[in-house]
Image 1: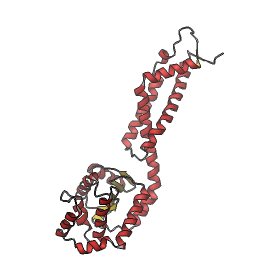
Image 2: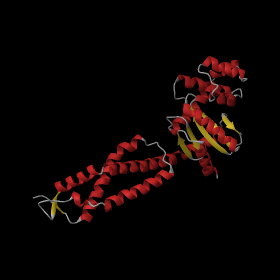
Image 3: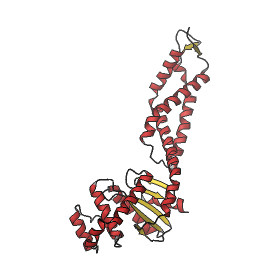
Image 4: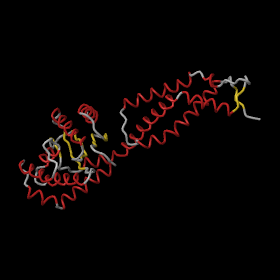
Length: 293
């Protein structure tokens, strides 16, 4: 004899359905969450997610489930199998609801994961602040420090460079420390080596700004010719490119990249916030005000 569930006890059935749906959401979300576990979700998105989750719960609580729990030949009871079939029918007829729950759960999990990562990185940021950084833009004594991780072959980095320049024009207390992250091939490494070597003759700002300008040529010979016209001593530059100091710089910068587990450029650290990817001038200013107010 089968086990039965009373049909008329809809409050209990709704509770069971809610538990089942939440279980489905957690299992299905496991895959989606770990695909994007480094994504940063803004606070406003989290608030939106919480609101949406409340609406989803209300949807289940208020939804008239009687259409899914009807039984033609038995008025009082449903078997477990029939109850499972009713819930399956509910899910099939409400796919948008299920997808929305998954999406909102994913956003919340990503936010929680990123908060955990940021907390773990606080000590690394504090250590970064204690180090000497000879490659920077802006005032050496600037009190608002932005760490920019760059690759000179990255199109978004070039666009991001201009956003940062605009920020410095508005706020002279901003100092941008450049951390090299050549991840886009050998040419990226060559350009990084030039930039690091130029710092040894005091020409880092000149070279860095040129490498992110529309003037930059596409081959090394023309690039070096342009740098010569801008006052860079090429004989010293070529010598320094093979120096131990530049090799040490490369090693130090790589250790920073590895420590923060950056895999794409640009990446930024402002105060205690770690921001992967491109953000515009207004967002940079917003974070600066929050972190250095």
